[in-house]
View 1 (tube, rainbow, N blue to C red):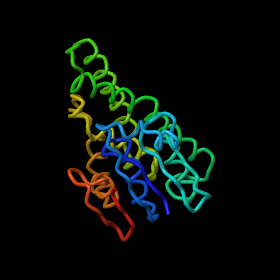
View 2: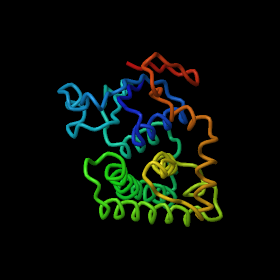
View 3: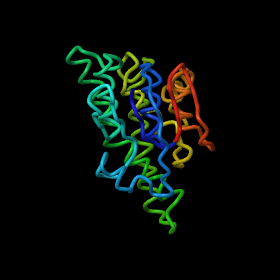
View 4: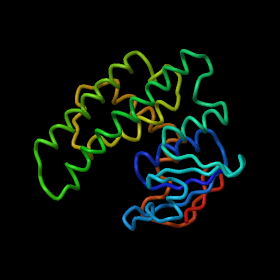
Length: 219
């Protein structure tokens, strides 16, 4: 059994989507970011950085994993799914995973902050992060030319990048003309596991939820 500590954010959705794709039983604990539950001692004991998501693998001596990219790799290696074994193919997937972790996520995250939440309107900061976010999405668009997924076969690279790319409007980023990116966003959204995972934890409710025959309990 996997315990998932998460919130309804792009980084959180990466792991709920992954768990839905690979079919492991898991339990969800929703962390209320507004109440700073991620800063409480109990949570910090699992992730000293005080960020979601975190998993606890009770089938592996209660092993704790934090950082969404590391969790994706751990689950892929645990199940032998969505991460190729062949050396070069594996490296390509990890490269695009790191592209998201080091680029798409941080840049679009900052775009969100300055465009939506920052108390001051700072046009230079908004432009900086929206422009860089758009550039990175253009890189994804180019990579997707002629293919259904980022590395040929569906992988954790797609799972990592999609939850951020799909919220481009929330970040104030225009993807007009990025035809292959748009097609990929729709293709991903049509995957049943992606649709389920993007609603875990269920938005607007903390009621217990069950999906795909898995044990999912929202605290």
